[in-house]
Length: 460
Image (tube, rainbow, N blue to C red):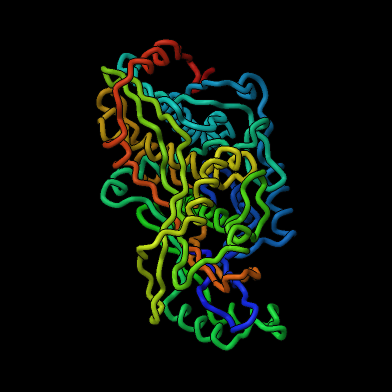
């Protein structure tokens, strides 16, 4: 994806650093199927909306207010043990599937606790019980609330809860992700790059330079950025999450929104007084970052360890034809920003649901891959067809496909006179993680032994 500055030297006297950045976050409308409730996910996510043409735009105050009102009318504040904050909550996939099948047969809308997977905020453990014909997910959990930004988050942590929609998508995309990693990117067209280069060549950075005039011309020249998604269906909530997280990272980098955490300046602030060189453009993207996947010797217990997400960076060069390629040089400031973003990621998840949602999605894709790679359904004697197969009995809501993002400009006066482009995206390669990062560790066996069981589909 791109949220980009474009590289160009302006004038001969006091130069400007011009950054052309995409403003955006994840957003979309969805048409919900009966099992998920009617219209619950329509409208705004993260302050942005995606219209029927796939154009990502900032949501109006009216849009945000309407969606927030709808969520608060439909999402019930949890009561009882499910509202407790616990370090470990267990979710039985066998009993979850049975509860969903019961609701479908009865023509009922799925309960909040089902849609929000009992308030799980991460999946840390995957436990197999052949004697019960069950596979259990376990992790920290708590009750949830609808926050003012129209997101459903933990009542004390502010981190988004896991969602059934994303679990279904992960299970149903697992074989496709074996052939190709799950990715999103947002890129300018080559023609847009060339038009922008031509417009920028007409500006001077002397006293007469007017950013307001330049912004209008540059937006028109650069044109819309194109969204490309691989492996995951573009009409799923997971696709929206990938786009949202990438957009939000670029918004922070380009200083288009203020960082909600202390110690994470924008990249624009970092380069303001730097002597950056010309022609290259930093690219950032987010990828999975687990310390290890621990497994018991008998393969009945697994644990995901580590933060889950990191930011990576590289330099790109844009040639005279608008084509991009990797550059040999490294940008120390871009790397510094990526490292700081990674260090602050866990804290960001409490303030911006897009980042927490992305980590949840990564956890679920790794869990789905473990189940498939090690044939856990067969080991457990469990058929997860209702969850893992898109047979029409349990369909996920259909979201508008994000297709393009209009550019916005951010002007920063710097002594180097550079315009820097930022491109990037998200990459999730769960099969590589499972194959390369699994380590034997008997400590996870104790968690399996102590997990207990319940007649209900979740328990603390």
